[in-house]
Structures are given as C-alpha cells and as structure tokens.
Image 1 (cartoon, rainbow, N blue to C red):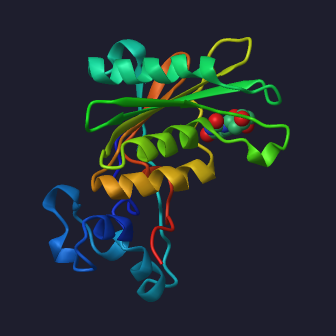
Image 2 (image 1 turned 135 degrees about the vertical axis):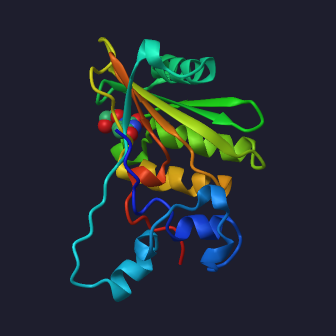
Length: 206
Ligand code: THU
C-alpha cells in the first residue's frame, strides 16, 4: 500500500532546507534510507544503463476512513469550492483547498476564459492566492475535488494537471516538508504523501 518513492527527496528538498548540496545536512525527518537514487542528477550522471523504477505511493481512503476532522474539513472545502468554478466552456468544475500553517484555508476554483489559455486551474488559483496574500505562511496540506457542472462529483479522483503540479511543487519546496495531497472522488479519497510524489524528476532549480 505504501511504497517509498525514489525521486521524492531530490534536489528540491535540499534546496528548500537552505542547506546547499550537503546531503549530510538534510534533516533526518526528510531523509530516507537508500543510496543516490534520491538525487536526480546522480541518476543521470553515474547510474547510466540501469533500470530506474519510479513509483507513486497512493493510499485510498473511504470517506469514513479519513484520519481526522482537519482532513475531512479540507476535503469538504475542496468539494464546496467546485461551486465557485467558472467553467462555461468545459463544464467541468474543479475545487482546491490549501491548509496553511497559520490556520487559514485558502480555496480556489478553475476560472475559464473565452481566450482559453487565459483561464486557470483550481490548484493554481488557490496556491497563487495563498502565497500572494500570506507570503509568510507555509502549505500544510492540499485537497482537490471535481464534478461535472450539473452532475455529481467524479467517481475516481482527479489529479492535478502537469502545470499545477509544477506550480504546487514550488510551495512545497518553500514549506520545507512534504505537503500531503488529498484527491477527492465520489467514493474514495486518495492520499499522496507530497506534491513531489506527483512530479517525478521535477524541475526545481537552475
Ligand atoms: N482543471 C483544473 O482546474 N485542475 C486540474 O488539475 C485539471 C483541469 C480545469 C481546467 C479547465 O477549466 C477544466 O478543468 C477542464 O480541463
């Protein structure tokens, strides 16, 4: 059910810690057993001609199995945020809720536009609002829900698009700890341990 993800603690974490590239200074709580497979650049520079397996650890919860009220409230806020979606083109309503370490929960919903590329997803509307308004606050957890405009919530959880994964990762790096992602479907909720787990081999520094 729970498998360690080899890319999860790549360069992003070490940069987030503000500790440069010294692996030995990675906080114990963020480190994981295992060799250089955690470091993306090492994978490519020295581990050539080897198979690399990347897994995404997902835990699937029934609604009555959610671990605590805070998670239940966050998931419910994501679901309610779908009603703030503006989706006249796709008719697909997505809501996101981000719990901050100051206790605030910021919500967002997809906002579409006649010029399609001007629209944005729920996750980005939430994370940009969160950091624009609470620049000192750090992300604690994220929940996402989706439903058809005139229908029920999707049976299987929707996961963030690639652009949103990249955008959210930045705030996980700032948080300096894994930010769990809760993806709410109709009958179950997936828990991913971090944004990084959704974005293997992420681009996070240059
Ligand atoms: N959408 C989101 O809000 N989040 C995602 O992660 C995937 C897609 C929105 C964008 C668009 O308004 C609609 O869903 C259909 O793609």
